[in-house]
Figure 1 (cartoon, rainbow, N blue to C red):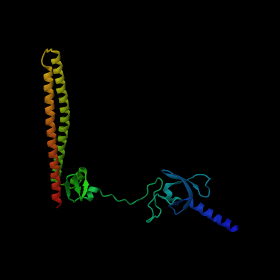
Figure 2: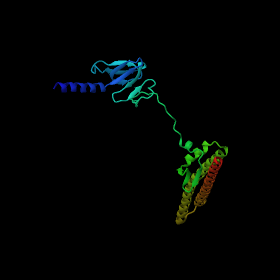
Figure 3: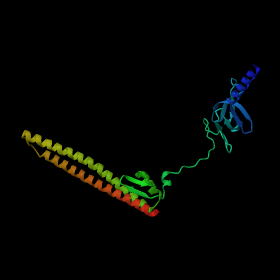
Figure 4: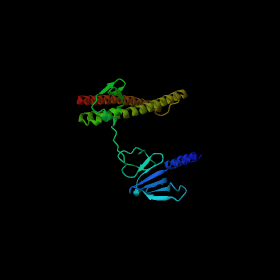
Length: 242
């Protein structure tokens, strides 16, 4: 019976020792504690031997690092060369070695850009036009940049012409219908006074409609020219990496 009591006492003691935090001070001292708060300048903790006792405060400037009961650690100065348990803690930023990730278009710099029926391809992987533009700009080739800017300007003009053409065509069609309705109502009533308002409205609507269609055609032409300039930029890029 005494052996079992002694065994339970040892087991309970080991649980108590493991269920605690350890504060490692810069002067090589250690404090067995239960950390309750990590503030901006100090930490608050209970002593492990007095879990119901008073709260103690310790300046962070005196602390090297804290190892928590779950195995995590917070470092307040440069950590050891090979900390096995230096997992992220609660709030503190610790010294880390970081490497800047390589951007996708940097990995693909120098690879040929292929143009297919469904889009652009680099190393047999489909790419968006935005990704291709980044690759073209990354080369810093004056000829490529010139074609790119020409393509963007032509595309912007095409977008404006297409949008204004759609609006003009829609408004012109409405005016033309209003003129037709006005002419029909005048003919049915058999009265005609003053100038032919309905004819003027129809003429105005027809002019707007034709102007809108013309603007749409110009927009389509500009977009095709923009596409051609963009393909020239790709050709220039492919030619410079051979």
